Length: 224
Image (cartoon, rainbow, N blue to C red; front, side, top):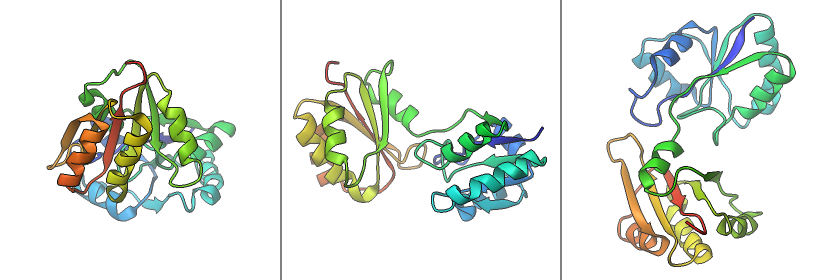
C-alpha cells in the first residue's frame, strides 16, 4: 500500500539533508510543499524532477481529504515544508491525523529541525524541556507567558525578525532579571550566531546589534 512520507528539509545549509530523504523525494509520485519556489531550489540542486503541489496553512484544511484519497488509490506522497520537519510549527498535523483515521501508513524521516541544535548549543539543561514554538501574537499571549514563567524545565520559543527585540523585552519583564537564556539565529547558515546571557543582557545586545534572521529563544526553567 502507498504511504505518506514526512521529509525534513534543510533549515539553512542545503547539504543538511539525508541520503534517505533524497531517495524518498526521488521515488514518490507527488511532493506537497509550503512554497513550490523554495522547494524547487532544493529539488533542482539535487536533480529531482518530481511534480510538486502547494500545501500550506491556507489550503490544508480543504486539501487533506483529497490527498488521503490519492494515497489510498496507490500514490506515494511526500510532505515537506520550507525548512525543517513537517508538523513542527509548520503544516503537517492535519494531514497525518487524517491519514491515521483512514488507515493510511505514515512514515516520518529523521532530519533537520531548528530547535534541537539551538537547545543543545544553549548550555541550558536538555534532559527536560518544553517546546512552545511561536507564542500567540495577541489573544492568550499574557496568559501563556504567565504559565511559562512557572515551568521548571528549559523553554523553547520561535520568533521572527520583526518581533525579536520586542519579544525579548517582554520576556525579561515576565521572567525577571536573572533568568538565563540564549538566542540562536540563522542556524546552519553563513551568519549563524548564538548569544547567551540573562534576558536583560540579550535585550541590550540586540538593541546594539539589530540583525535579521529566524530566531530560536531558549530560556532556563524556574528552578534550574
